Image (cartoon, rainbow, N blue to C red; front, side, top):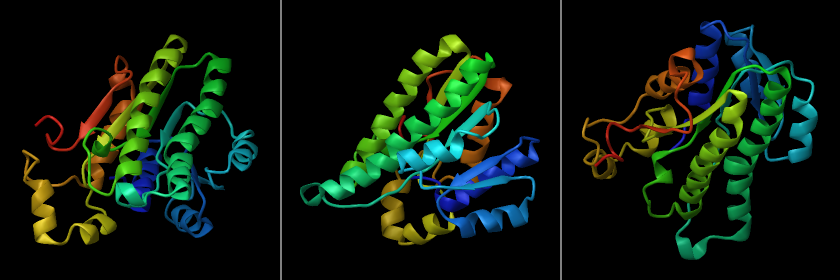
Length: 232
């Protein structure tokens, strides 16, 4: 479960409203154009984060960054016995490798400046709960959670905090479409004590908390935004 375009857009706009100077990075220029039309203060950068060299070239001259949200993700569902090498590599390149690479670039700058920083990786409840046909997706999110913890360990001495948010199903337009079948929705929702899925704002607000000084002592945490799903 991930925020997709609607969630990424909402996160960028929320940060801009809070006064942050936002640099939005995605591979689709049309999405960036519409985002800038809605908020002209946002700086757009178009690059495929799965491309290591292109990412390095695009981000190397970006100004000092103190806050980072790693929210690039893709999902391709296959039964375990039908997973192909290409599908495996694609999901790991975007969901894990890209997050590691962008965080390296940003954290090096934070360390060089001696400034405090905060990084939030957008993970999923799927990192901790097996889901049918999600073998590779679940595995990438589990890897992202452990990457979060190792980053917290190694970057903490430089006063750079690293945490993740782990949402359940999020009611974006795609989420509503994908979970519109009452029987399918009930199977998942019946395991959520609060009895409903997450809204985009629930995840965005958690991200804002982890980025802010209000979470100054929170480091290495994988924060469920799931209404109690993982707790039960």
